[in-house]
Length: 310
Picture 1 (cartoon, rainbow, N blue to C red):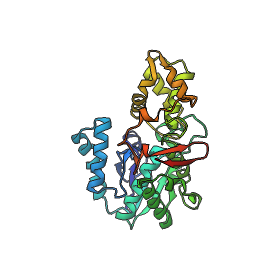
Picture 2: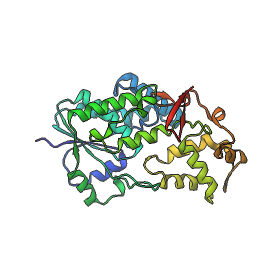
Picture 3: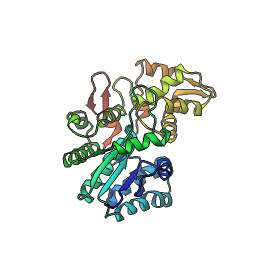
Picture 4: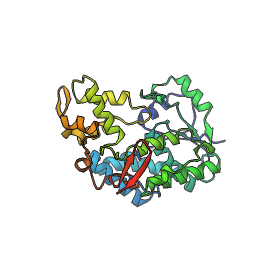
């Protein structure tokens, strides 16, 4: 049997993977499909155009970088057609689970003949950030590989359907998905719940992550922006964001801070956290997408876990 094709969740783990005694060809999936608009047709010209537009606008990714780092690696994936097994190395957090769905949707369409398996890690059971692949000893990674989960056709159909829901213009459809336990994706239900909590709350117009950042700023003695971002990185549970994502959130919340050396909130921020002031009108960005849905076209009721469409 020809050695497997391995698709990893990022460059850091790709470097580590090369030191493991596992044969096969490596592809690095350099995307963050949990942010910005996504289309169901992964790999299409329109799909990549949407992704580039978002990354260029919000993260200043140049066209050259996007082509060299993302598109060329995707074309390498397209050229790998002989492997009978494809192994996905994607962690249990929101960031990786959404990327995983996009890759599985592509594989379902373009690699029907291959046996697909998934290697993942244990999620965090608290606010503490889960240990990712790069933080695990090699022996643990080999154990995870040995116990990888092989997907059947029903799993692939479900993953593709879940990806369609993520790319739809209505997050209510995701909230109504209920049969996760019937398929080999034990951490997808939690990832989708974390995704839904990224929509603005009915109570104050901020989502759960934005509120968490303000709460950290209020409750901790933090010297500067970097300390606040570090606090978020260490206590994000199963979100899986990096410093770039948290710096961007902080930039959007900046008007609620009176100082960043040390970190201090304005009185308005405290009123927002108490539910006395709704910040929706000031933070609203009409063109911002989460998957296929406009972020500010819906309000999320955190207690009842349902949506109000605006």
